Length: 193
Image 1 (cartoon, rainbow, N blue to C red):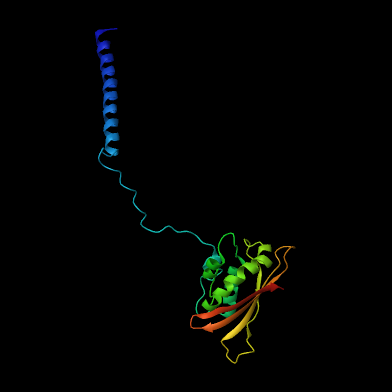
Image 2: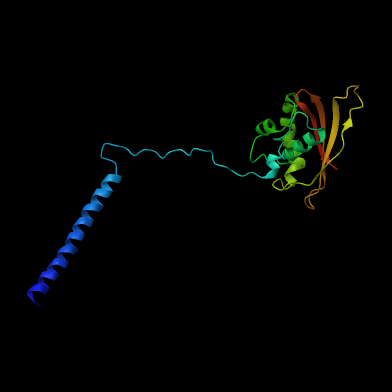
């Protein structure tokens, strides 16, 4: 190899070594800049600015669980919302007292009676249904209470279609009373149709 060739080869080797040295130096300064110093602690992640959107089924939004009942809601709407919630009682998931507290439009005076009645209805009827499925329901027209002169009381029946051969159709009879907050449930009777 000639003297000129050795100089060119030495120049390329020097460039490669210089590149490796510079790469090593830059990687060390990059990693130390991202890591906190020994005495500093890492900052927590920033919270999201807007709340996260969680899609909900239409039945929850439109009052399937009683969430969208206005004070002007008809007795049939109140009865259907109450019945759909009542049908889903399961003592393995909640206590009767906690469940009754979440029922839509239940009159406060009826709550204590219903807490005692729920385990009986579960044992006799609701345990035999598939409470996870949305039942097919038929809501009857309101029947004004013949014992009172007041038009503020009525009875509405909600019929649940049989969901299997082991359970027949169920009928939930609800006594409703019109008040300042709209129609509220004052009596509950569950029986076979």
